[in-house]
Length: 213
Image (tube, rainbow, N blue to C red; front, top):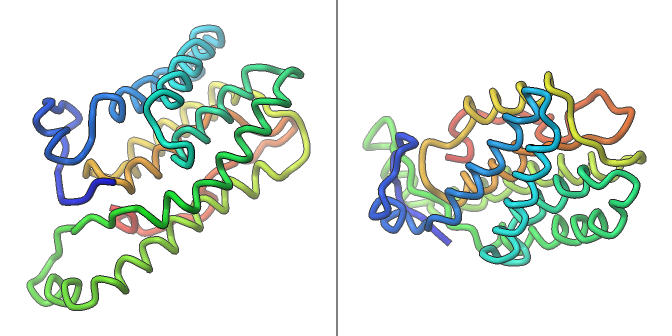
């Protein structure tokens, strides 16, 4: 997995991706999933289904089976299937469960600190910093799992909710190309909810702006 501190301006060169430990598939998954939500925000369901399907094909081909982005894509795809979603929803549930192993292997990025004192403290207590960071990541996953554990068929979110999730991604997206960014994308860029539920599935718990950066 990737580490280091790489500030991004959302227009990356291949060299920048490689330096951050990313590749084009990491970036393409984000773009496809964002595009799907953008289509939902405009009320265009069929193009959204196509983008979700493309993101799932990419995730299956390029990501590990315990990668939360694969789990997110499976859940998004299940929401496009209506009453036929049982099999893929079961696969999504297994994928979300497997994400614990992915978190165990995450690389905590070395973030910029406001003072030399804080930088030295992080270097001295790096294991403690990393464990605190993983605890927060597990809490994010727990929010998604709790929502998925509710009853009711998965369905695509409405335009208003799609707008809200895109806005949240824009606001809370880590400014580094890092494992936290992959996790945040997988728990925010979700295009589904339980039928009859007005609430948001993911991330009811809000962390500090830099908690996973």
